[in-house]
Image (cartoon, rainbow, N blue to C red; front, side, top):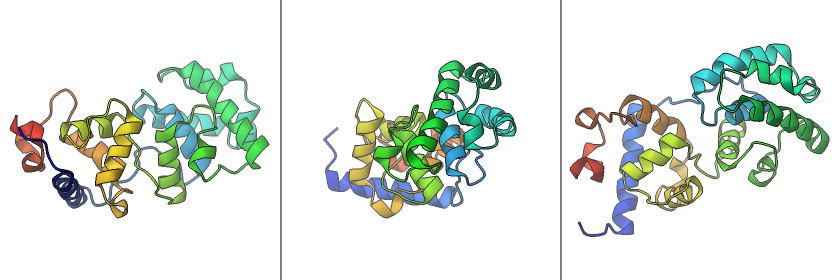
Length: 217
């Protein structure tokens, strides 16, 4: 198969985003955070290598026990770990939750910072988390959060062949117009769960079949 031109790839990426918008026009973050950027930061931090559903089960207990940033910053790590014990890497995440709260208080006056660079200084926060917090927490769209679903679908669609999430994001930013970035993560997650499942993709029922080179192989 001849190598796809950048122009063609961009046209196909736009068509993919348009179709996603038609099928998932009201896609929202799956994590419950009540509109609070700090609670969103903690929820996304907790979601690494764990399902959003599992996180949504533990965060109500966490916030009932520690309703403010000050409360969480003063928490005992074993007590937080006990609340989080049902999710992966709960001990490390418990420590990061407390350290994150302490840093937000000590260095940012109790307000979650509004820049990628400062967000990624927070313990447990990487580029993906920063993207989601900026987008869903502050309405600032300067990138695309590449989680396992977005990474897998970008490669399935052959919109990227990069070997890590950061480089995959850069590939997507080059071919998807900026005014289409905002819903990509939420829509592609739904698509990955409902259609392009990692274990058993429903290619026969997929609304992107004509745009997906993998379906034609």
